[in-house]
Image 1: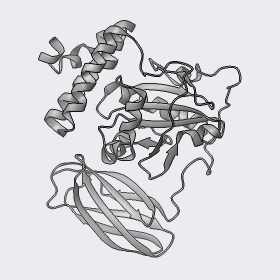
Image 2: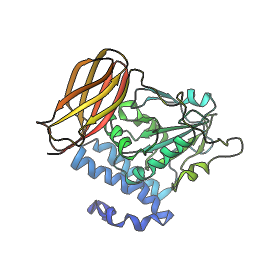
Image 3: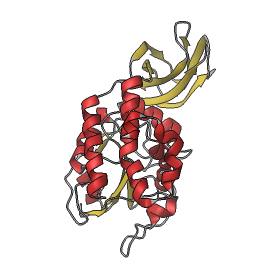
Image 4: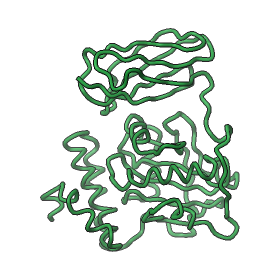
Length: 320
């Protein structure tokens, strides 16, 4: 098979597939999983067994059917409880019991169409109230990417506005993806307040109107601004900034605290490994804590600042 013998073949040929629905599904489903396997093997060395099974499963789906989830339209989906990258619990049946329609974006971090459509999903989330209205959005990783990777993905591809709650493998996303039987990425689905599956594959994504086309009589939400109640507040921590960034020998972590407390600053590389942890004291008001980068290598890092239960993450680029 040419895609296996030449794993980067899709890079020069993927555009020729996008215009054809029957072949775009194959790209949407199989080639991206192969790409994930290549990245895993050469860069991230993540779970090979799961990826190989995913490729095999995706191949059978692309040949035999076009279903993006094992649930059928009208099926009652199973409940799930996961924890997003901000530490908040996302309980499906609790959300739907409040009358909300739930849109889920299944993705993995190195998937080009996932990256391309993620800002559109973010704009949709933003336009309809950041989960404060009748629309509720969740970004669900396929189970191969931990918090550190999903945080980086959201920073780079989540769009300029507010970002929907995102769940990584650390938060239980893998079990949800397995339960829904999703093997093609991205897969966007819609679940109604009665926990029945309404849309099993919202694709291809052109713009926000693709999601709006799933509205129906009885479900016609109006655009609304994101209220403070719908955007998760970080009570004791705000205004995180890294300066300089990009940095060479030193960067300063600048943040505001509403009270005097202890602070933990952790730096992760993009493999999710802790490079450095600084435990120190924060004063009420603006704080500035320096990080010595002399021993750091050129690359991208995630800086995680935690004050009590409040957490903010920022991306740092080191250039030598």
